[in-house]
Structures are given as C-alpha cells and as structure tokens.
Length: 265
Image (tube, rainbow, N blue to C red; front, side):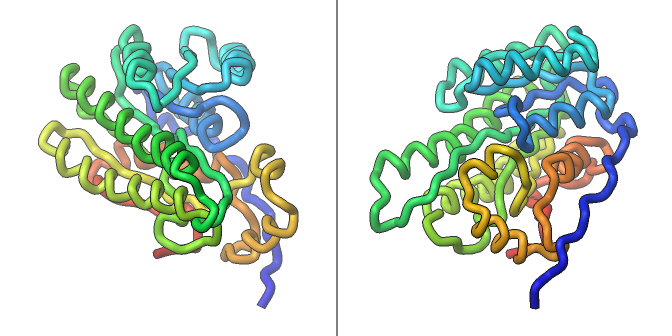
C-alpha cells in the first residue's frame, strides 16, 4: 500500500532547553543534521556553540550567517578532521573560553554505496575511521574534559537505522553505525559515575541538498515510501530530538538509542 506524502510540521520555536550550556558539534557546517543542531542549540539559549567541520569554506560561510543572526560571541568554528586526534583535542579546547564543553554532539560520519563483493580494505577502513572511530575519539576527549572540569555533561551521537537493519551496498556504513550504537551503550556505563550521560539518535532519512545530489530520485522515492509519514524528516526534526537528549528533560536517560523514524530494530 503506497503512502501519501505528508507535509512537514511547522518549525518549533526555542524553549531555552540549553540555556547557559556550551555545545560542541562535529560536521556542523552545510545544510544537514549538524548545521540544524547548531541552529537549534543557539535558538535553545546555548551560551556558545563550537563547530568543527572539514570543509573550511562552508564553515566560514556558516559562521558568518550564525554570527549575524545570533551574535559573534556565541559562535566559534575551526577546521576539524575527526580521524586526527590533534584536531579533536583542539575542538574540545576551543570550548574552554566559554566555560568548557557541556554538550558534545558527534555528527561526523562518512557513507558510500558499494557492494561487499567489490569493497576494498581502504573503502571499509575510511568509513569505519570517520564514522565509528571518529565518534570514539570525540566521546573519549569530551568525557575526559568533562571529568577534568567537574562537569555533569552530555554526549549525543548520531547513529542510523541502518545500524539495525540490512541495506544493499551499505556493509561498511551499517557496521560503523551499529558500532556507534554499541559504543553509546558501553560508554554510558563507563562515565555514569561521573554524572555524564551518553545517548544516540538513529535517523532513517533526513532530506538536505547534499543527499539529493548523491541519491537518485527513484531511490529517494523508495526510501520515503518506507516511512510512516511517506516523507523524509527535515534535518531540524532530527536536531530537535538530539537537543532533547542533551537537555535536562532527559536527565535520567543514558545508554539509549532513539529512533527518529518509524523504522525500528
């Protein structure tokens, strides 16, 4: 039975969920989920948002836009490659002038479509290094800094429903995202005694310009047809759930992976 594509709801205004918090976001430039998290955090009253991304031009353009809208004193950006430990450390350090990291949002990830039969070691390793090991580096660095600062912080990771279910040509990405889910659960236990919470979201399909460039219209229609509402999520709808997990409203949630989708395990 084909589904009728429903329209997206109206944008939800801020409610000061992150008031006074310093938020660090990886892969936060551009028009995807990361950028939506940055905007949402600023709208929710964050003291400052520190944004890392590998794309310097997009990062500069985004910083200009956010600074003009929310104030230059609330936005800091720097080029960060999560496969490099020094870059991750520098990103966490950049939050110190704002009181140190309170919320770490790990959004950086790398995908690609290739059959397991043709997949090279290099293709496998790159996706795992960015998506899984990069998340690990950021979780470790943020946790260590939160503990050193005496901060009861929050970490939110971006996983995917592909970590739960099979999809053709996605063995490397599925393995990486399933790893992010397992990392989230285990890390949550390791840092619980320090008052730090670690959770993740698992989106299915969030529509943004880059996705449209790398995906055929036919595949997009097929993927939308699997969703309960017959449409892709807007990036800000995923960001809303990430902000909720980062907020005090989720104070007793840790080690959870929340599906932002109708596609469950």
